Each structure stands twice: as structure tokens, then as C-alpha cells.
Image 1 (tube, helix red, strand yellow):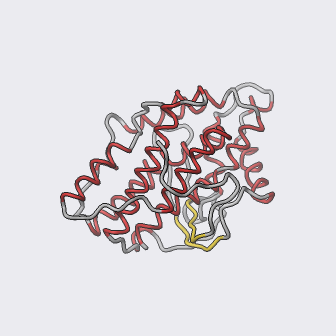
Image 2 (cartoon, rainbow, N blue to C red):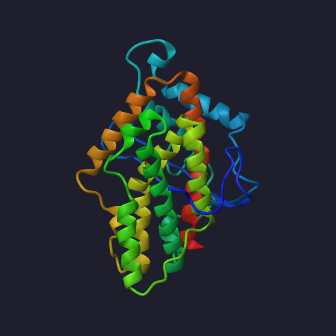
Image 3 (cartoon, rainbow, N blue to C red):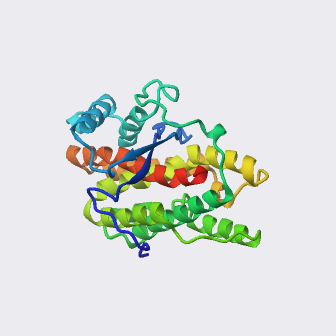
Length: 283
């Protein structure tokens, strides 16, 4: 699909209020093991990871790096490297490995609005649809490995938006956080496949854990505890997640160390884009 309006450079996006999202991904068990934190902050654009951030990525990856990547046998899968980098972006109260200071109140203190939540859902639908379209087209052949994983969300979101419309709500058009992120994903998927996979992984896995927690809290406050289709999956979610982990590890097994590091270095940017979507819920 062609995302509406704004386009984004691979280097930077238009300056705007941003948020950071900390996501941790379990590497071995069947739970997704993610959590989400949002810190509102003003940044002069989301730029490529600087040298200090690269050192953080390298240190985290070295801790969890598969010996096979160093030319040895029997190492850890790449998904665990992704988890190690993500854990560094947690706050200390979320994880022992966390290094970030909390910048926003916890989710249970949010005051969501129906209008803000609808903006979030509309923009999320655009982002998920874009991810689905990219893997369906498979301009990079191994993107096809991530078709029909069972984690797809665009159809579920379509049903939810139809429900909101039936309740008398006006469904807005996609806004800048969604269109900018969708455009960035389209561009990235063609120019930097490993970096694109970082976003694919974090968007889907974050939604299955931290995203579900947020959805539950919002439902309690403004939807009379209604569970949206966005937070339901067909089949056993833990198995769906494990299947995707296995595919990610299989695909990444053919990557060079440089390509793996490039994927890891995109983590903070993926959190920043996702954070812009989430902030709409309570703004």
C-alpha cells in the first residue's frame, strides 16, 4: 500500500514531540516477555544511532552474542541479542539491566480519551497494514518467511474501527505519527532489510505484551472493559510468537556480524516511532 502523506528520510524525520518505548523480548520461553514505557520528550528529529548508542548496542550484543557469530559453535540465537539490546532501554524499575530513567507516569495513571485512542488505533492500522504489505510483496525474498504468521493486526483493527463507528464515533484519517512511520518502513524495507526486520520484530512483539497491558488499562477507563479484536489472536499466542522467533533466527543465521549489528542499532529508533503512536492515547 502507499502510505498517505508524509515521507521520512532514513536519516531523520520532521522535528516533533517524541517518546521512547522500552521493549524487552524473551529469547527462550514461549511468552513474549515485553514491557513498554513511554517518556515524553522534545527531540530535534529521530536521527541515526550515534557513536555512544552504538557502543551500548555493541556491549549488549557482545554479552548475548552467539559464539557461532564469532566463529564458534553452539551459540545463542539472534533473538536473544535483540532482547539484550532492548533490555538496556528499560528503566531500572522495569528490569535489572535497565539503564534509562523514567520520564512519564506509569500506565495506570494515564487518563486516556476516546479521541486520542481512536487516533492511535487508526495510525496503528496503517502501520500494521504497511508491515503486512511489505512482507506480502517480498521485494527481499526472505521477507516471505514472515507472511501469515498469525500475528497480523490490520483486519482486527478494521473490525474495531467499524465497532467505534457503530457507537457514533467519527473515525479520523491517519495522522502524522502513523503516516510518517509507514513511509519510513516502506523506504527502509527497500534500502536496509536488516533494519526493517528490527521494526517488524519490535512492533509485533511489543503489541503482544506491553501493548495488551495498555489496551486492558484503556478499556477499563473508557470502554467499560470491552476487549477489542486488536488484542485477540486465533490460536495459541505463545506458539505464534515462538514460530516467528524461529523464523527470525533462521533468517538471521545467514547475516554477517555487520548486518546483525545494523539490525540491533535500529532498536532505539523503532521504539521512538512506536512511542509517537502510543502518546496519542493520552494527549
